[in-house]
Length: 288
Length: 268
Image (cartoon, rainbow over all chains, first blue to last red; front, side, top):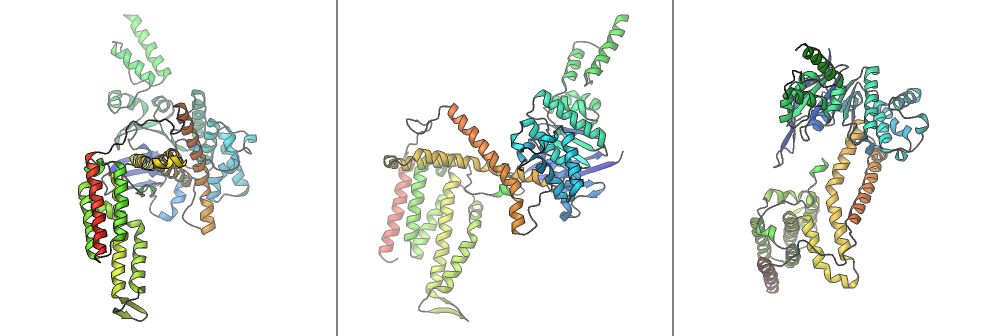
């Protein structure tokens, strides 16, 4: 697979030369591949937020590089806005950034900044609104009349409307109820599947990560602790626990069963996989 | 970039200067300012500078931090200095070039003016560096207590002040966040003419106002839930009480002012 984003020895230090000097990201190196669904997890203060703000050029690295399609994004600082259009970033609680009179106008903010006009503008607004489940009659409403969950969808649509090549989501489901959470994740999964866009999901919830992503990057105190497929990462559950991170509920059950003497692979992370394991065990167990 | 604002920043510490009653410190600053404006000669200015140096030494605040406080007013200092230097008439001219001439009194007043402003700012900054905003408002409230008899809402004013101080960092952080979010959507705050730049602020100001109102609303509810009903009959957890060190400090302050006044009387 082709890497779309390459992060090379990225370091970011806050407050250089003051007593409060602190590295939030230290010597991180990893690739993000074209079309993959990458999950980033880490404890509070592990450098997640700082890291993702480097990927679209909101923060400038203290040292190291971020390459987008093989080109250093800071090669031409004047064109950093183009990078921000290609790498869309949805912040935590994005509903607090809404400001326009109507939902339609708010979604249009990004595409208009890109220079889109006329039918093209209208098309990408309506398409992205549909993607996140905003009905046509809601487009002319004020965003402040909507419910919390709907506001978040509007904010998400505002970034999707720029049709970025890479979409970064920082805790997109924080503060939503379980139904709203699942609904929103389904929208994001559809978007990823239909558009073949690279998606990076930052989350606290292991279950959310386990159910959605192809690959996981685990951060611990400003460094990359591990990276790999969910199966590979959850096989190292002990290390995750010492990093102060949880494992998915299903994995916890499998680990508890293993601890009680069942011969089971504890690195499962979906209900289906656990079911398979248990069925296999039952078949084997019937023999003895 | 917004986080670099150090307006009245507090540096925690455990020195006598930190432990003094905030009322004492406010009164000392007032005395210090009075003395500073009465000072007329090199001797009295020297005395004031010495007082400041002693206080700085006691408080263990870094000289670097204190000097950094001068940065925002640097323009004013330079401007005052130049105006005084060139445009004060005097008997004897030290230096003449074209229409520019420097008289001996001009030089004197320029030096003293610059010294005065610098000492004034460093002195007041020393107070905010060693006193947390909370105890500062507390002290101010107690000092102004007498005005309650004139129906001045002293407690309410102090409460408003501490809430405002409390929310400055929060709102700065919020502004930073909103700016980043809008930049991620391609907002451009740097280029364009004045009107375009003003227009570019709308996507920041609207969410900022909304969130400020939301926070105010939440805070009001939270305060009501804890039965807040103004200053009437309200007691304090930390009651301010003058200690021995406060009396000593205040006496020293009064002595310095007296000394400056006496020296001034003798034309020094």
